[in-house]
Every structure is written in C-alpha cells, then in structure tokens.
Image (cartoon, rainbow, N blue to C red):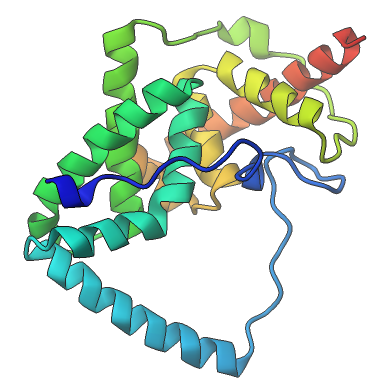
Length: 227
C-alpha cells in the first residue's frame, strides 16, 4: 500500500495549534472562537464537502490515492493527538503509520454511524495505546498528587510555555490526557470523545473534572520552579 503512506510531520513550530493560546483563557488548551461563516463560505463548504464525500467513497472502494487524500485532510490534528499522547516524534510516526494501515483496511466496513474524523481518532488512539504497551513507558501519577488545583496565570504564546504545557500533559494519566486533548485540544463534544475512547459520556466528564485542575496545578508548579 505504498500510495497510502501518511504525510510527513510538520516542521517544528508549524503545528502548535490548540495547545497554547496567545490570550488569557480559563484553560490552556481552550481555543479562540472562529469568525462566523458567510453564506458564500457556506456554499463553498457544501461543494467542498460533496467533493470530499466522493473521495471517501473511492477510498472505501480501495483507491489508495483517494485514501491518501483522506489522510491528508485529517493528518495534522491526528498527528498532534498522537504526539501529545506519546511524547516522542518517532513513536508518533510509528503509531500513525500503523493506524493508517488499519484505517485503510477497515474503511470498506465504515458505515458512518460516527463521523469519519471520530472514527479515525479512535483508530489513532488505539494505535497509540498499542505503542505504549509495547514500549512499557506509559506515565502515571496517583490521584492524590492531582488534588489542590490552582488557577493558571496568563501563559502567552511562547516556546517555553508550549514546553511547559507538553510536559504537564505527559505527567497526566493517559486516560485523562486523552480526554483533555480530544475535548479541550481538538474541540470534540463529550459524546464524540466518549465514542473515540470507548467509554460513557459521564466518564469523559469525570476524567476532565480531574484532568483540568491537575493540569493547572502542574503548570503552576512548573512556572514557580522556572528560573
């Protein structure tokens, strides 16, 4: 399946996206709202969506080039998710390559019960879990260490801030990290995140309830210890 190879990862600094904001926010992963679409943009989007649906159908029929186009559409967000879950670019590439092979093989059975993006998120998430199991390097901390949350100061759009956020994310338990990335980092609804992670909606709410204050505390501690 040589024609289906995943696109190359973006250059360093190109894809910081939703993981660090340039304005104060109630949460360091929260994104700023986009401007409302115009009617002209809506018509263009409708036409583009119809064209993309045709590409998906060709990919489902086994067209490798069409599948590569599908991958290119979702790869940036999937790449961010995999990197934040694994914390290593090499392991990210391995997990994504495996995920895309699985997706290509499974796509003919995709019936649209969930959105295509949610379906791909779940495949990538499971591939990352397999990568973590193979490496035996999943980082866990106890719930006792997560109590006593504090508000996060204005972080700003800086390299040091992005490193702080990345380090704090990796200190969270994998399940909390995944829920936080999907909902606050990628904008998925609770129901969508629950579908991706294979858990109940209430479980997503519970994990976020622990992960958000834990991340704030970890970031505050990192900032306090910075020179």
